[in-house]
Length: 441
Image (cartoon, rainbow, N blue to C red; front, side, top):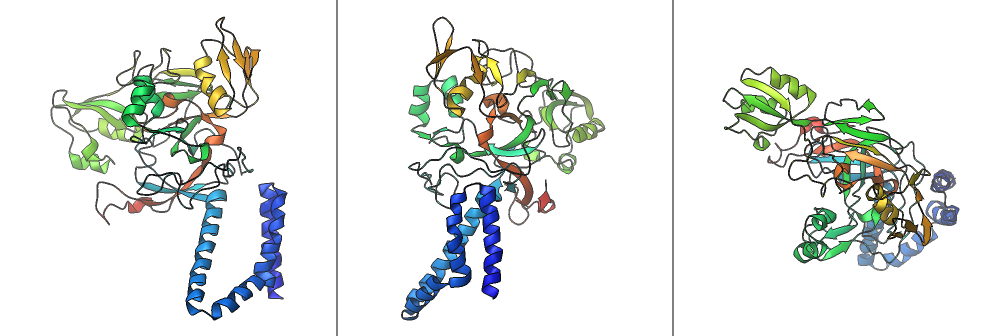
């Protein structure tokens, strides 16, 4: 009787999962649930064989445990949660370098694997060797299961790096397309190659704040984000750099440490005297102003032409626009089903969407006309929603200002909890940031 109750329970959960998944062919798996809950003939047969060979019994026991662990963890990673580590300081002081996150997949709906032939527990490269951990012999199209909501303005979002489809094997963390624009394709490949091409679901993962969603019009004015004519909320972790002039002495390192600064990364210029680019949140700004040896505090704002290393070759859409990282836009964010009139001026904004993200062929004719998939046209209708992502550390973040829109099919999930946080500058156990453990976001 207990086995039948167990079967009804697990079968009901399985059917609900199939309904959520939307592929009814998976109902063919119900006999497997019946086998494990009621019949158990396979287990009995394996048990009889293993009783004759003690070594085989131990091996089969380990194999059973390993297969169970792999299946369960893989299932959880695909549909519910995935571990992620903050690799850079682009989100300081909101999310810190060394934060370990659990990323929730159900917030926006789990995306089904497009490259299913992959080594379990490894994203795109094998530890140590750097070799691909997946095979592209089997590829599926983009499909997302319904989640609890959609990406909203100001959400923290984990997503696949849009420019991560082509990787320089000798500089995998750098943007291949930036290298090509700044030097040339041949030089980049010769110096940092060979090239590696990755499918969408095997690109490196980034985390940023979504500052604008599909259909929004975004502007950055003097370092602050405006969307649809309304200023973004001043969240506590958002910071810009400020020039802090002192009376001739540096600020006490203990004071800076108490404010949350990593003192080893703070640069004091004796010739100023002061700090040319001190990253300050609103809270830190007010504290800095009260210090006795601080003479003045002025926000650093890039004006056109952009400061080094920013230029039209660095800032999206990589043509001269008169924009800088601090005065950027206005820029309309493409939305699914919306159409745009294509012109020579706006083509740099949408070309990668048309050709790469949405898989069309595009030809620009000598008379200025456009041919998409073999048909002459002067408009384009978007197939997906797009988003604009920015780091909270506004002057130390490679984000959508540098590589453009994030497509809907690149969205991975929403950070839910910081389960561990370590400081690379410290030694265990002092390097553990105990106040960030199990912090919900």
